[in-house]
Length: 161
Length: 145
Image (tube, rainbow over all chains, first blue to last red; front, side, top):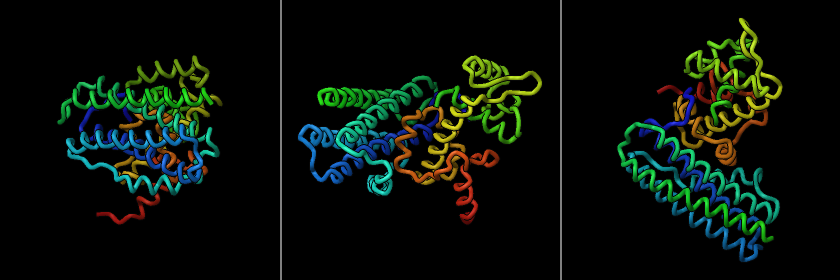
């Protein structure tokens, strides 16, 4: 067991980036499920929020996949994660619109926390990776900033309602 | 998972295996840290009311410490199960150990939305094999290469 937060190898970095991809895919798939479950019954504000979240997650996923490919590792297919989300959705689905917003807030906060921890773990490591450390950190910091904006957007909507 | 949670989980598992208080040496071995580091953190857990240390016997978790340790163990199970079942990682134990410090509880909770975990988790975690007994069963049924 390793105590302390540090990324020390290409393999470990690739694995953590794969987890980032999965988290993004979960956001996309759950947004799609929310739409289907609520049968298009959303007001425009929530519909726009979910659509934007799904698009943003797809963008983040592509950026992470570029890094994963440069580490000579494989990404995780969206279809596979979508199937898993569908299989477990009944157990974890929100019950109403407020639940959908809360779920979306959890998505954004979880992603923010994940990228924040990952950035810190890379910064604290003196290991070298086969791809440029600055490129990795710049990408992750950009994504983290968008997740922070996402938290603010959802919080603002929740406060207005 | 933060460092304190990693210690709580390790003490909980060592206590299970030893069926009594966990020796500082065994906790240090489980976490691959020095006995001095383990002693220092055990002192911090004691100050927070999560553990009690008795000289020459070892450390035991308080009721509050057990609750936190079981929560940490559940999150660890999620990481192992996610690695084994979703990413199909053969060395899921070793990888879970190397990743747990970077995976926050909230991230584990999200990963939990796509895995199938037994309702008795974390009681199905086998300290000896360092894995959920159901995962270990599937592993032993798989033909060796």
